Image (cartoon, rainbow, N blue to C red; front, top):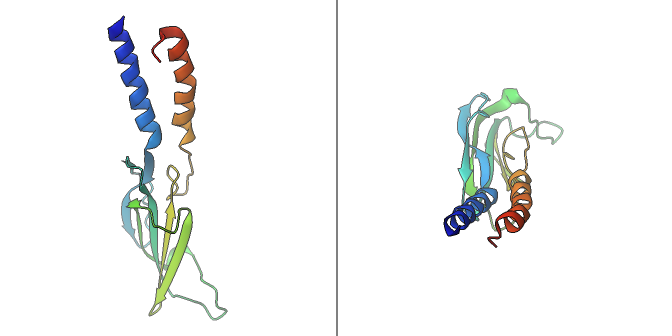
Length: 139
């Protein structure tokens, strides 16, 4: 009986660990090629996702920043240490007609076009804990 309790205790610990990690797309592309096919897991608390897009052309004559796919020079998606200013924010710099837009976020796959959230695993853990408590009496 003790072996079963230890087994299920470690399963709960593993599920909690999985629920705390974040998944980000990780790729590099040039000329706007699609790079949303591979993902990695950032398993540390200070890590989030980053998307860095470099555009050619800078500011148009109306003072606007065109974000069309034809003007993308390169695009980088990865895991990164989140900045001190917070998450879910973008910043941009323009220099000599090149504009770099850097966006930080802390949700699963937030540096791509498909937004899934990390609450799927947390919901699973919240459901499993009472089951383990009542059925196996381990907590």
